[in-house]
Length: 468
Image (tube, rainbow, N blue to C red):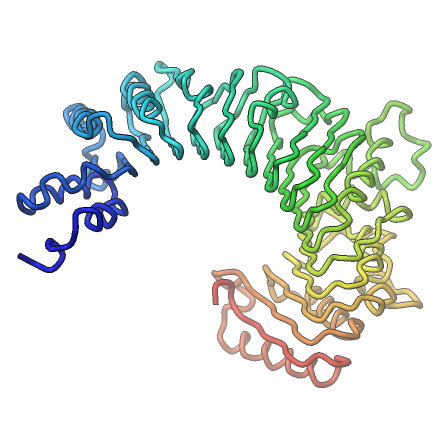
């Protein structure tokens, strides 16, 4: 007898529990000793891509699909009525929804607490999740991935702590504030591609600690009237949405990190940049976008903040009322050529303890309000907002090696007084202008020159491709 087979049943069962279910079942052919080792396993991991051998093109054969269904049925049947703690099902081939429905109901009846479903069905087989799943008294963690529309009706999940929903689109039967109370102990919530039926949304939960909410692309570019957050214990927020006309309630005093992506159309960007807002119609929603200051004032205690380019455009409406981020240590900024940097100077001036800045790209639209953050506009008081910023590390990603980028980096090196480290990352595939090894080497040498001649205190400059 080998050393592994001589281990106690409980230990063998624990080892087998880390294997995909197909491999765990296959251990039963090793010897009589292994015949029933897998059966007490309480974690089932079933992946049709493992069973159907997609690399051999077998997944489209009807007999193979039927064999897969029989395999799952037999695995559940052979375990009798023993409990199941975790059930992970990846089924993206053409399996009839009745089979999937049967499997989900089976594990729900056995008190499953961790349910991970990744499913896909043909258009003819529209599938509704079992009602039992929405009223489970044991589910603590639920993850749903569906490659078609997902409809969420009323529910009551008193033990649920983690809910992760990713789908082509999610449609809720009622208002979001009416659904959240059905998860009284929920701590983590991730929802992608949400479709709201109303334009006034409230997220309210005293237990929620992590929230990722993606409302992008589901409203048909109709801006919501109001969005409120009553989440006093939230520590992490990812929020993607069109800009709301108002943020009447933002209760997130314990928030530590946030990624805020407030999308805005090109036409709205043009109207935001109008030198005289009196030219806009009285009912233009752009006039109300300034209320976004309420959202940022509500998250002013964050230590880590990431703002894509659209968010910077919206935030430019609040330069005179910019909140003070006294705890902010990390700032991430995305930059694109069609969006401006009007908000950056005021933002940097209001971050008194900032340590690190990460910039995704250095190109941006030049406006008359870039002020002194960049060398785009020649001003007498150059670099004022940079000189007041205590940042000691600057990281630049997506570097293309253009003269404009080099001028921007030189400007940063010259005016950030506390800068100690600069890291510059190119793309995984180097851009054409710096793909030549000699050009790349000269660029590194150029940074060394900047390091010794231009900077006032910078100690390290590093250039590398992403992933190094």
